[in-house]
Length: 431
Ligand code: CMC
Image 1: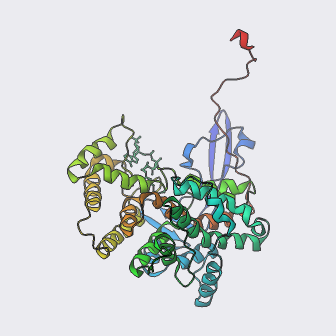
Image 2 (image 1 turned 90 degrees about the horizontal axis):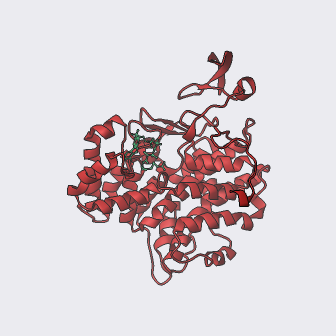
């Protein structure tokens, strides 16, 4: 990030402060307010960070007006069509597409780490069987710091690297184990002859008593879902990972924090909430009723899978996802899937409605992903875990970038205090 010749002038209370400006390689210029408090004795106020760049980053870029998403400069549409998830992992982690040898080496490193410590199997038993797999994942991923002591030292570049590979390799295993545990089936060990997505399907759907061969078309569709979810610049869970990591917390603890944040229905939990909403709508003729509810200021209902903080044109991931939904449903022999019909009709009606047009609300990545995942055989409770395992590489790439950033400081926002000022303690007998 380069300082420009431009600066911003802020005038208040008879003071004038010159603030330097910086230019990114893409996106709007930023006003550097780091010295504002020291020079002007004021804070800025920005709940939800709608106008605040909390860091510089060279990983992912979104142009919300154009509906553009780039990983290290490469458009998501090109990656979704031509690349595969592990190659995207390499790109996000190291900044460049791998050569053929680098790819083989990276795949071997990830594959080498797919199993979890055997003791972790017993750890699962502490959870209730009806736990949501996300609840189990937060606990088990956090507990990785109790199992992998040789990759906790964040000042050691090699240990950071091992922690990154471990998490990319083990998150599918942990997510599949959380699922198997919740349905009372035995854990299925990873099978390293399979590619990343096929291995995950195998760990979720195989049982020891029967042969299971993952369908390559389904594996490809799942791999694409993983690519689409791999990173998304400074979203809530990524910012959570960065904030947790800014204190020097170990990488497993930081990723567990990211998983906890992702679970919320406004973020990664939206794919589950969206499918549940489509089920609740139930038939095309009830769509107007739900559209009316979404527009009613007195009703907290929102159209799940609609709207985005950054995309104000369309979410490019949703386009790819919609095409995948048709492909996967065809493959599964699911014709005229009622939920897909409701989703398509809902999208059409919402996109023609002045409320959604005016507020620039478009389908996001979560609108169609649930339909695909359900057609693949995943229960709704597994939708967010699949988002989590796909986003792990983004979280860890951003965490690694932060650790090596010379400007990195512990995250410590300030506040606009609106509570009581100093007052004296009153004894209970006088209250
Ligand atoms: N349905 C109806 N109205 C909506 C919706 C929606 N889905 N989303 C936003 N609005 C309205 C909102 O009521 C507000 O209206 P007003 O200006 O009259 O108060 C306006 O649009 C702006 O909304 P906001 O909440 O200020 O916008 P935000 O940037 O803070 O929120 C969001 C973004 C994604 C949380 C929100 O659009 C939402 O809750 N969507 C539904 C949940 C969802 O699909 N989340 C997945 C996001 S993509 C995957 C991910 O990143 O995890």
